[in-house]
Image (cartoon, rainbow, N blue to C red; front, side):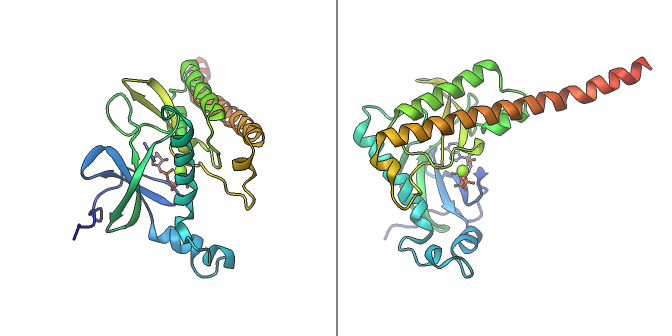
Length: 227
Ligand SMILES: Nc1ncnc2c1ncn2[C@@H]1O[C@H](COP(=O)(O)OP(=O)(O)OP(=O)(O)O)[C@@H](O)[C@H]1O
Ligand SMILES: [Mg+2]
């Protein structure tokens, strides 16, 4: 009988609000995402609205949303868009049913930094911003449906084929009861353009705030020295 992939005791490379992300023990180019037990209890346990507890797919509804989009991409695109994480399968792990995805890495082979990490470390240059805009443009023209395009779901990756580029690693799929965005390319396109504009606006604001914070202590100490 095949063994479960052992992840217990290993250190996750990153964590989101629901999932821990581990390097695949058999392939350094892949990651395994597993939903934390605490997140399952919090979101789907007792005390949650009935429709969240009794849904057929329980917490794996999020996998279903993501997988549906991956299937749409495989069906409609000649090559996988570089701006979207590629889902390659499932994994039977000792921490539960996991989703296997390609790892987005930086130039040093480390896990690619998120958009907020780039901003906080002063690396959101005009060129990086242009790459973010390119990524959002590609997401708009691709058939994907977007749900949660916050900064932690966008990472700045590098690979030989695409150079520096942003990748959306989470937050895809249709969350509405009537899947209008899936049904209508026009509605989906409109919603995506609005989301993309919001992402850029928020990144610009966060970057301006970071620059201001960085400038404040220096100018304060200059003022102090002049006194
Ligand atoms: N394919 C990937 N390549 C590189 N890093 C990744 C990848 N997938 C996830 N990560 C890292 O792991 C973190 C958490 O992953 P993910 O966003 O999938 O978890 P989540 O709990 O579903 O997130 P959320 O809080 O948005 O619900 C990301 O913010 C990112 O830093
Ligand atoms: Mg996320």
